[in-house]
Picture 1 (cartoon, rainbow, N blue to C red):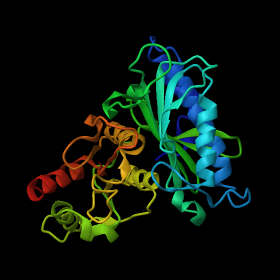
Picture 2 (picture 1 turned 90 degrees about the vertical axis):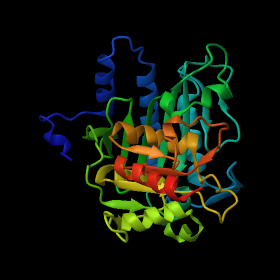
Picture 3 (picture 1 turned 120 degrees about the horizontal axis):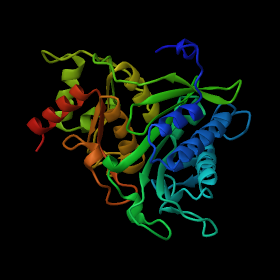
Length: 343
């Protein structure tokens, strides 16, 4: 992608870009713009800690478990509270839901509830924190279903095709925020010297020619026949397969980000080994749906193996799903293998 200084000599901050997008919609109230601002601000604060985690003594676990049965990392807890505190009082959100909380996250009664819903995974890949591996934040924004009073569970349990915006932040060698409001996918890199996200990757499209496939093949013995055969095909073991290279970090945001830029497919199928994964491991509401929204707006696709992720309505906050996401032709091909070989 082009360097920011090559965009007609203009440096574009994320605030300016969001405002310019808003101007194209005279009916816009500015509420969605401000929510995106607040998410970007939360990302800056979280980034300031991820780059200083060892010095700030916030590496390691709290000793507690979240609703998923996973050990809560100290930085996980910090990210969760940061996102909440920047969004609880604005009058823009009616309710929130987080991967770290059992139930919906209500807006405090002293603040007026708004018309939008924020769902988020505050720090995806947090098990990698202690090893200096890239981690990320994932978010999605819905309009409320209910019309008055505090937001409800119903407002949160919406399919991905009802999202009005979604995005992620990857904290790695640099911090980058990628988001879409349904009009292209755009990436902004944080310049720490000025504390601003600057437009670095406008109008991201998944390349037509894929480079990588990303999956934890340590679980291959527990996959369905269709998924195993697809993996053989994508490796080039079967005639006509593309022979893609394996790249797997184990941090969803980082794996998705690479394939968004380079072309390819990430998948985390259901497996028969773990009783918690008969329907997959990843969370439909906080992880799969927002990333599926981005993939679709970048020319890609996402599926649970049979159905478009964006068409799935979660039955509960922490519902899990298999996920196949990335280049559209590869997602369609894995669906073909699953339909052909799996009962």
